[in-house]
Image (cartoon, rainbow, N blue to C red; front, side, top):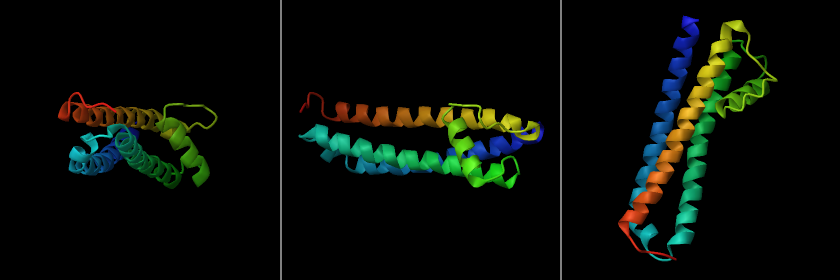
Length: 144
């Protein structure tokens, strides 16, 4: 049980570090173009920027799913790559269908994987909302 928490915690820290790097690059790019985005017509540019940022951050979360999948495959918790990716994605998104479950030596990892996804989705949402809010405070009263 302790080893599951140790491994799961290490994977969570790794995924947070990767996601933090992706978020930092996204925020830097957004800030670099913030003045342009705040100028009319604002809505089409904002929609495009948010689409690109969302896809960028989803790539980061996908990296986390793959890291967990490779660990589950390497550790023998799951038998093939497709099943490991499927289980990681279903657990990461907290759907937890239950059609694939881990055996007892790896069971706690599924909860840690779900917690990992829950936190990263929350962080991603917070960053996107903060960036939108910052545009509205940069140029108050600007409307399309």
